[in-house]
Length: 279
Image (cartoon, rainbow, N blue to C red; front, side):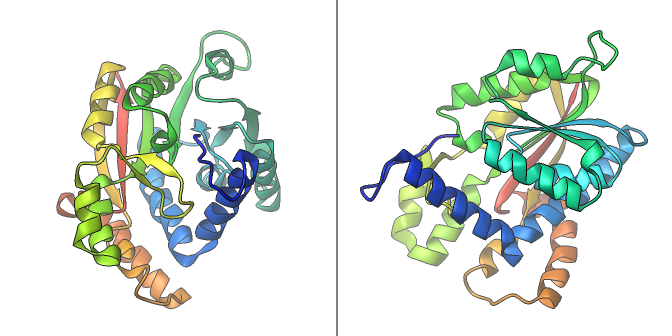
């Protein structure tokens, strides 16, 4: 992931600040809702692949919040990330949930092809690969669209034929709508055709990735898109305007899961989500 440097400190201080801001958002009602809605989508798709345990790779999985949901469903999950601290948090969360035996962690980057190749081998040897590969909230932190395309190819190569690639990143269309509501039309105009924007949780500069470009990268990597969804459609509009309690979040979760299934709401959701099957 990329980092930015502010006038108030160096890269290390900025990384700590960004990590703390991201953790705060994850623990917010809205952040927890993002993980629950996506977990519902993934459970449905994983069930279509076959019974547990499936072999899952969570690339750039951080503290394992997506991975943990699949481990709880009985799947064997490997979390790949560059940060030993967040991988330690992933192991601790798995132990607390009673699924430590289903979660392993590997300190590596997406660009570490040797590590990915090693992970895809069967325990008994041979050329096995993952049934499901996740890459959520990662691609927007890469340096360029060309690098994203290379990442998608690497991720796809880690799948078995027929396996599923799950990709998610912030939706550029939602950025524009949210900017107009929060900061006014002038800021919406600034973002409309910009190549980069700002991550709302951390303040970090990120790519504004059109899902069509990522779909093209998946197709070039030998995958067929089999599912498109939007994650957090109305929540994005409510986040700054409404105090949340558990009852309202529970109501929102049911609504958001249903909206994620409907095409007409996909383009304005906070995150786009793609599922692609390796041919």
